[in-house]
Image 1 (cartoon, rainbow, N blue to C red):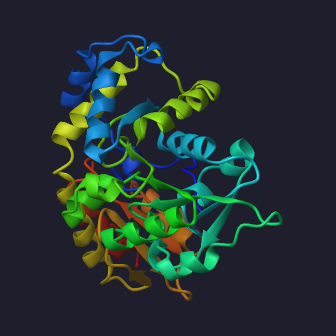
Image 2: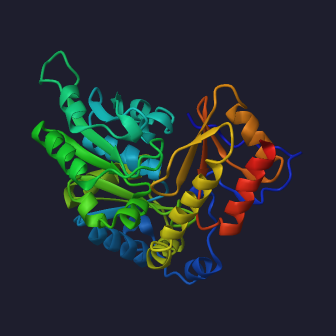
Length: 352
């Protein structure tokens, strides 16, 4: 589903990077905050900056506890390892990150299978969830976890409505399942919808926030839940090498992001809409209207391939994503200016 970046020594330097919001670089002010961070042994609970970040995220989500991890993928996998047993079944949308972009880790690490539920724009309906839930049986895999991804990346950066999230979480809990929110771009949903992070998170037993996407930190994600759940999760953090030492240097960048990079996500959303409006005027592309910072363009069947579009843009110093057989993805973030949005539109038009 995801096409990796392939280094091309013959290509010009990248001047506009729309490949992903993971391409953000820490600002000079964030670097200064990291340089001045008070640090200690994170693995022993002695890093004050990590502890401050975890306390803040737990409060943000209305949870009892939280822990700092290197990546969002590790948050997802530790949550699955903590909440499931080998042989269990996890329910998620068929395009969820845990299915499409984590290297088969749920099966390889936790021994669980993930059942993908259908639905438009990266979201499944309460009815689809009810249909997928099976009655307890010695012949069936126990269904122990429901996962929702906010925002839905491959759905186009779409925002799950709060009422739908509450309903699917309630259905899952009634069926005896735990619930987990993949919050990679949760703050994009918060800023765009006006719904608080706490309201989005409360229906879910575990939730995490990634700081390396739109929030612009170089490393780090925080997984939150009940004290008992996070205590169990620490065993997995230790087992798979997620325990750290003087991690406060990185946690300081995350704290800086919470203070300075949340409200500015509205700029990324505005840039995404500007980009989509411009690309929609170009022949050979069918552009989805973005809700947040992800712009998807479907390539016309009788036109250039996604790879051809991407290669032509790369020759102009512009990096974008190829997503599957027919889609392009362009991701706005704090490293992309309005002028660069206009330059990208012009580059597309020149190819066409």
